[in-house]
Length: 91
Image (cartoon, rainbow, N blue to C red; front, side, top):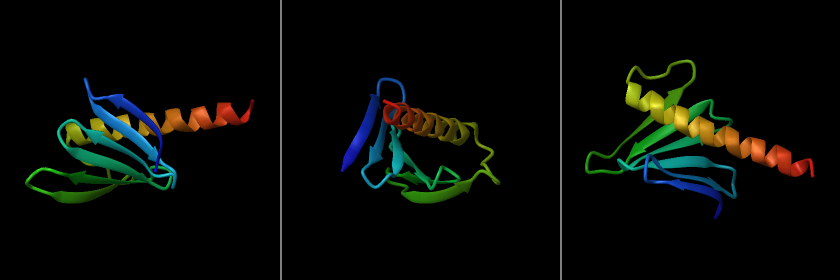
């Protein structure tokens, strides 16, 4: 079940957090990036006709600027959710 989401499909796509704690982002080009753990590992899936799955780690980030940009967006979304949880627990 989706607990949190952000819809910025006019520029990037749709970010979500499931009740299991999984954080992901579906981009407008039909790729999906998912944080595993605390984003130390990132799974990327393409949903188009050339379906494939890649796994990235912080020790070995890809060379492609487009993939790095998507990882950055996913991580920024994850950090925002974390800050939101921390500030909500302080009330």
